Length: 433
Length: 143
Image 1 (spheres, one colour):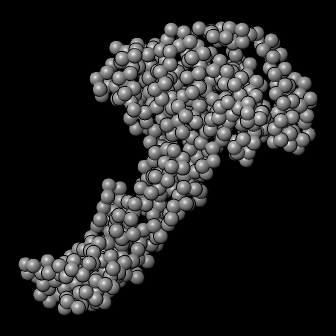
Image 2 (cartoon, rainbow over the protein chains, first blue to last red):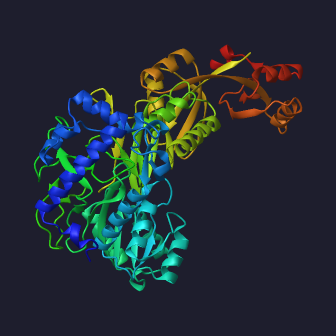
Image 3 (cartoon, rainbow over the protein chains, first blue to last red):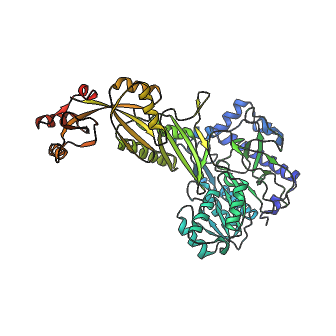
């Protein structure tokens, strides 16, 4: 079902006219209300009035995650706080998250985009949605929640964790749609099978999964184990949260971008030059309707390509491929963004520990497992075992507290960590995605 | 009256202990006593050797993390109750034993135990006050 026929199937020409008008309004507002953007525009020698066509967008400077951090917490907000009704945050390096705000209209826009996304994934009014995305500062849980209510479906705000209870709810409440991270849903399937619960006997029809990269192989596995049709959903809190783009269950081939709210570009991450449709590069978003937190040419660091071909579902919105990588070293561990530099600073803050480390990521029983290998130098070493075990525990605890991710810390002999061309290899990602 | 022990950090994987003994062998260093404490992912090897300096230099050059610790070598009468008497003295004097292990050679008719105490000085004084024989490091390495 298409939730928003007018916008989702709009002819390109009409859509682009709307995009330009909304872009120009956004630029005027951002320039007038956010000192950061005013400064950036001035430095680049552009004025909002110079943007006369969508093609002119390339003259605007980029916005990076570092810019958002530099303006922590509310420096990028374009409205007074008394009109901000919601705040979310994503994890960031050295414990400093990226903070985003929403006006009432923004929350409504986001709910509409999520209603569209759930509908694209197969949900309708009468469905019961089992929402296993985490509720909290993370945008996943509340994003789906508001979208489900807007669509008129019944939402079960089960959030993440407590897997056995989730399975009881699935059996008793008979949800027809499930939303979660793909790795969690596979974990759920595993536990269900241990408990003798067969998804064949449950009522699921569709699943909408995202917040971490996943492969076509995982899709097949999920569809086979859960007896449902699975689609991919994409989003990031800096742009709005989940619902920036979503696959339709008809094609299951690329995520339709909500172009009436966000202009997507693909650039060469090295030169910053825009690339034509079909070419692979870094994905850039400019929000054109957001009030509280407009982002202009935001560098997502996600690598993908855009496909403008018409889709069998009838939507005219372009599609982005599954994200194939990152232009930085960010890892996504069970939906949590982790930068190696964050682990490094935790190690540096732990007494006697030198920052000689390596991160190993595996997928064990369908869940991401992060192992932090730390070399034992002379300061750390002890002839008794207990102090060494205590260090392991302390690092584990500090990582959990500052980054919010569970890691297994393993002490290793010096120089066991592979070094290539003199530079340490910091991350070994064994996940087959 | 202390003796010196070297300790080596080992990952719990095959061949690591063999590698240490290979390095010592190539450097003509004799192992006099050893013990290993281990967990599921790592172990700590403790050694009394005939040349601490040379042993730790060779091991460090091969990339091992090496530590030095003061331990106490104690003569223990080789008869029932020999060790019990010594542990009772230590317990009464409130000195804790972190770990201990046996030396291969005897000293005369006595067995030799290597002790690692939480407070080495207190332990030494306590043992000497109670007439227990402590073997000096220099003599220990060549027993």
